[in-house]
Length: 353
Image (cartoon, rainbow, N blue to C red; front, top):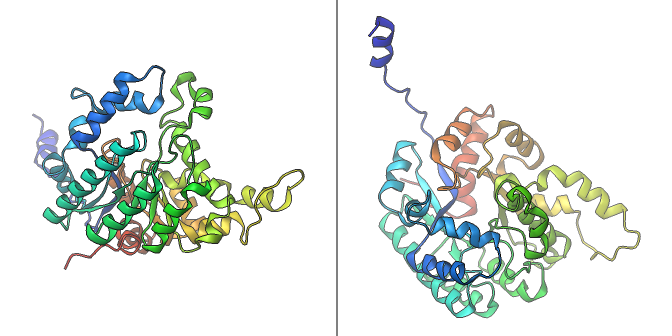
């Protein structure tokens, strides 16, 4: 070994600067959820992009199976290795939204109970978002109440559309009202486009995370804005991952086209412009978008107060997300907001003493 090599070998890894790091879009699974999804995969007669993904997720030899089921072993070790203080956990997509209503309600309750148990065991390492059976609004509202009031979870996770329907449709407004009344945020997590759209994405498998997820979830967020929902529930706060699922980039054009180009259109009249709703009612996270230009753009458009850090574990991993924000050429003040201060405020997370 040369003197230069010996010198390098003797050097320890540079110590990472300490921030309180709260990751706000981190997935887990329970065996009961996986069992039902295996049944759905086995009985499916046609290709379904969500079940295609679930076939991978439920495979013990696959890349994410053990990471989804693990909460206390490798997950905590990895968090410690990269100096991540907390995961905000939610049952992995598609939650229970593809299940028959009775099974959906039962699995959601079990998942929320297990999540609350994990938080009680490691209150400084975990917080959680409740899963609800969206396909049964009355039971969904009951589970919202139980999850927030009894289990003390920090918000609600809904994996975009349910049976090809969006939350902007009137039948789901009671769910949005209940979330707003409980003063907790709604996180709309991606899934593959609705069946009506998915066929157009099939070539080269664009229906998954490469393009379909953000197109689907961005449309969902926009439907909530343009439907007038937020005039009825002005205090509802919604979180979108992946730097806002593309919506921040389009705010100028959304305002221009919605306000001026109305020939032959019968859109609901809104009290505010689309961008005003987005700035008032939406937060975004960095999940899966570890890219400086997008971060700087979103800070300029939305302000650092509306952005939270996330990893998207186990679909993406800790080093990329941590190294990205550590090295980001933004102010230390903004970095603190994005790493933990905004999450503490939005999800009402207690700070370490």
